[in-house]
Amino acid sequence: MRELEETLADLEGGARGLATGSGMGAIASSILACVDAGDHVVAGASLYTATMEIFTRLLPRFGVETTFVDPRKHGAWKAAVRPKTRLVYIETPANPTMMITDIREAVSAAKSVHATTLADNTFASPVNQRPIEFGVDGVLHSATKYLGGHSDVVAGAVVTANKRLFDQIWFAYKMLGPALGPFEAFLVRRGIKTLPLRMRAQTATAQRLAEFLEGHRGVRLVHYPGLKSFPQHALARRQMSGFGAMLSFELSGGFRAGKRFVEAVDVATLAVSLGGTETLVQHPASMTHGPLTSAERRIGGITEGLVRVSVGLEDMEDLIEDFDRAIRPAAR
Image 1 (tube, rainbow, N blue to C red):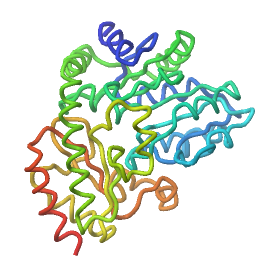
Image 2 (cartoon, rainbow, N blue to C red):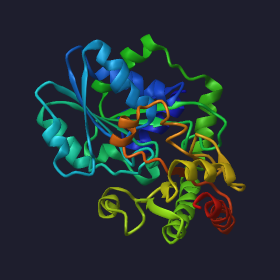
Image 3 (cartoon, one colour):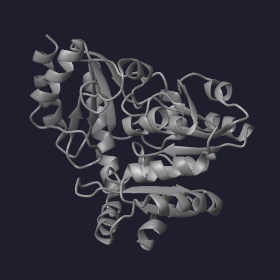
């Protein structure tokens, strides 16, 4: 376990690492360690569903208020923080819209009110982005995803920039108990050995697939930071060394088209996870983000025809052919 935690800290350039039994174990322990009753949180509007539910369902029970901001808007973080703000929470790229947060801007806003900044770095992985280098206090991962990389383990990780924050999170962690087993720690450590190779291959395929989708008549819009048409492409280039293997796209036919597409793929697999060797597709409006209200989905940028894709290691041309075949009937 200690070897894995030291490896995690090295990967993210942090002081201490903590392995947990799930990504939400890491996220919940870290958030709860940073707030008290009456505090205020600022968070990006597009987040993993369970993270969003912590801010909208759990923390209000303890008198903690959250303000959600559009991370694409310059100055939004600074405008949202208050004297009572104790946590600024970012997820970049965001799930599943791929919105990019200007990490330096979010950190500056947090520091202006002496708040802690936490960043979910699951989508990018430390191969493509290291938030601590931009001043973030704590980095979070669902290690189930790219760190593990083989769809055979459930795990999470926290890496802190300093020991003080680590001790705060450890205090919450030991009471909540999201411990990781020794064998699961071995699986994550094994997966990390191939992380750079996998990320390079998957990122290259994601770029090519995004370019293909952008030119498809059945696709209304593609969300991928590597596309020059992506509104935050320049920002992504500044703070990421690679654009990652996650993308999403909006089908012209709306909710029905999204569902038909994910049910029609053959090479790709319909599943809600991500970061493994297999290409996975899912329809957020009817699956992962279904528990949210329609208003919450709209705030987070979840449109009815949005499809999320985790690009795997399959042959690039096979994937393109598979997507083309599935889009044509779905978009009618």
